[in-house]
Picture (cartoon, helix red, strand yellow):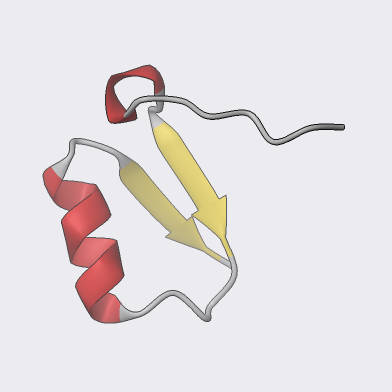
Length: 38
């Protein structure tokens, strides 16, 4: 499956692993996207 590129406006929730830095998490939250780290 090829990568799918979306704009931040098209994303409501990002589910990722715990390797996401706090700085990156805050930048994503600032775009209006909820972040769930598992």
